[in-house]
Amino acid sequence: MQSPEPVVTTTGGAVRGRRHLGTTVFYDIPYATPPTGRARFQAPRPHTPWPGVRDATEPGPTAPQAKRDAFGLLNMSPFFGPGWIKGEDYLTVTVRAPEDAGPNLPVLVFVHGGGFTGGSTRAPLYDGRAFARDGVVLVTVNYRLGIPGFLHLPGAPDNRGLLDVIAALRWVRQNIGAFGGDPGNVTLCGQSAGAIIVGAVLAAAPATGLFRRAIVQSGSMDGAFTPEQAARTTHAAARALGIRPRLDAFAAVSDEQFVGIMPELAGLDLTTATHFDPLGGITPFSVVADRRPAHALSAGHGVDLLVGGNADEGNLYLAPLGLMTASTPADVNATAARTHHAPAGLVTAYRARHPQATDGELRSAILGAALFGNGTRRLADAHAATSGARTYAYEFAWRSNALHGQLGAAHTMELPFVFHTTDLPQLHGPHALLGTGSPPADLARRMHAAWTSFARSGDPGWDPYDTGRRATMRIAQDWTLTHDPRAAERQAWHH
Image (cartoon, rainbow, N blue to C red; front, side, top):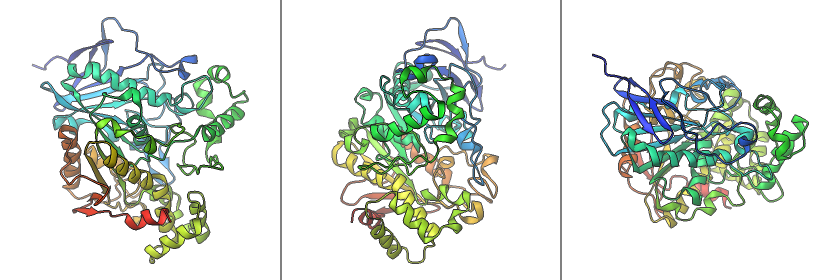
């Protein structure tokens, strides 16, 4: 006889999930009240309890966003998911647990990327079956994006999307025990924009005690905008909407209009007299802070940290647009000028370090360091020096042959290996993330096991990082523990 669908009681009410391939999954559980009208620009509030049993057997609404199936020639649908699935009640979590979950299992809370403007728990990459199969309760989080989530507006709290994540962590603390999870053994994990959010949560006092460990994948702890930079996006959005840059004016505008003006905000110049654009123009939204999270990190709440990035991060922003081959020396110089106070010296250092590199490869290396690598290393150093907890570092270096071999170990490439979702059909093909052929059979199993081990015990299986040796696991077909692998790059940026 088929066992009945599982029902769990949460602080908001009972929810009915479903059994799926040896796991139980509960979709679309609210952790905060629907963000509508003026409430879109307020801090999240607890959800009103519902009567009866809420159906949680199917995925629900997502945050307002434009649909993004591709970036240039690259199929990005597994990363972004279906786009905007309309519905007010989208501040929700999806919980995936072992079917016969015992008590006190480790919990992994994942915050998706997408440039602060896209993505959701419905993205195929984030299927949590492998984590549940291996005894980890996976929680994926929807949070406010774009204008409702991150627009800087006087009279409204900044970083509302980040406040959503903290609210979700509070929900986890109060409820995850009912799903078999241990509220005292929670790991907060994020990738790209999600990793920037996780870094900011590390520096946020209201999050103290809500998680025990953190994983930062391809983020940047220099990725916050100053209020001056964020105000440029605010004024540009107001001009595009034909309104004044005030809270009451934005509160009267529909989500459809917010999504509709997003193309007009692309490519804004957010460099000021005192600060470069830390995200290089790839998104007009980020966490807003007077101080970069890397500098505000005060012991990281004593949590263990696993932090790293990919060897060819910048390739994602060039290869799908044909710019790995089309880039010129002028493009290399322009990229350096947008990210460094002494661009000529930076380019000279990179050319000396990589004498055989093409202009596209040099441009990618500089862009990847500016967007992700430098901030990642600063976070690792700051955490190792001040946190009183363990720090572990990695660099993912397996190279995809997608886009005629030009994609390489680009931004987002590690995700299918972390989630052990490398068998997804939409990840394979000449214009898909993993390219043609098959990745090494053992790579996904081993990388997923390292993340699972870290969530369980705080140890991914290699030596900790310190500011002397800077031990870093290079993850490819072969795994190699290296010491300070980016020393020359760090020196080039600090000359």
